[in-house]
Length: 467
Image 1 (cartoon, rainbow, N blue to C red):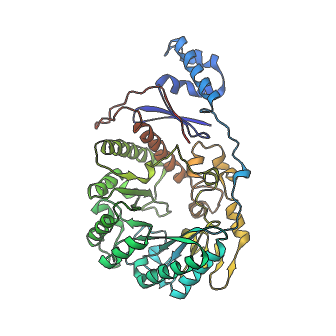
Image 2 (cartoon, one colour; image 1 turned 90 degrees about the horizontal axis):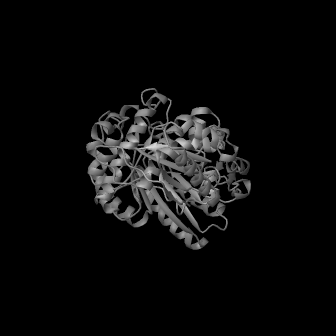
Image 3 (cartoon, rainbow, N blue to C red; image 1 turned 90 degrees about the vertical axis):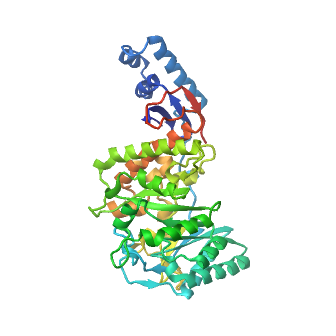
């Protein structure tokens, strides 16, 4: 399957199966629809008024050569044989706090309580969850535990003690646990920074961008904006983690469809690892609609130009949506099934209930068991293990399927009440930033430097073999 598109004035051609990316000229872009239909005569007639016949024929021959080399219209026959079977759990989201010191208006977790009671996870439950992970991980040696909430810093002693317990259990079991934490940084201090730097393999800091954007949605329980209360601690934590795995994670909504300004505002504050994600909600105050797509696409293109400019002039930053490694891409199984929620990855709540992931918490139909009771629904695990792009009608013929891996199961359920029906808006936004990511990939290898004024770029016919 091939996909041809234009981004920032450059024409690119992606071969979905092989991952090959080709920068092409206008002729090839116009020729591709006819090539996919296999009709050279129709192409010659339709393009005769725009291009010399000899050039059209030569371009057709070039496309055929690429196809014969396996870099165009590749068909690797990805199928069920590549899928991992259920059996081991390797990652655990530990909801140590169903409470939060903020009241973010768009919060999927109902401002921290997940639609239930505000409470903190007892140490006994956290330790039992570690035992559950070790027991269910089989022969897997590398495990992961993410401290999540709500706000996990509100249950700091449990975080620290659980790391200590995990370190003891990993030695006993011959495992290695990679601890991570997600925090809004409101309660950060030097002691917590030192511990996080020493013990956490990755840190996610929640911050939405410009002060006015952040304060409009991320408020304290008293209704005041939280930016000024958070920013210094967030910067101190990120500085301490410089050179270590971490990123600042924001959310953009209908209130700030000019989100490229938020990404760059964070970069200007010294944050170099950035992710600003589209909100997924039914709340009309914040929900992104199909009518927002032209603006969203424009913002990603603007951000891509500035992203490349800064990186080429020494102002280093990474933006999660633009980080593609086509030469060392995820394995086939990962491309087919995605994050592994409900199969290799589960979440545990303060009372010990197990869910497919943190975003399913509160959906009683998806309770998979309890860490205290030794229950685990292997039938539901098999159900999620089978939740792959081969079984999702909307994914089968989508050019982006091997990059999005079928999208978020929780979002599909939230928006459509159907695990096999991805949220359409999320799909369109993903394709918009993926096109820009492919443009960034090409730009950082051969495309001419993009002008600050956004002028259209000259393009060459050139092949970039992918992974």
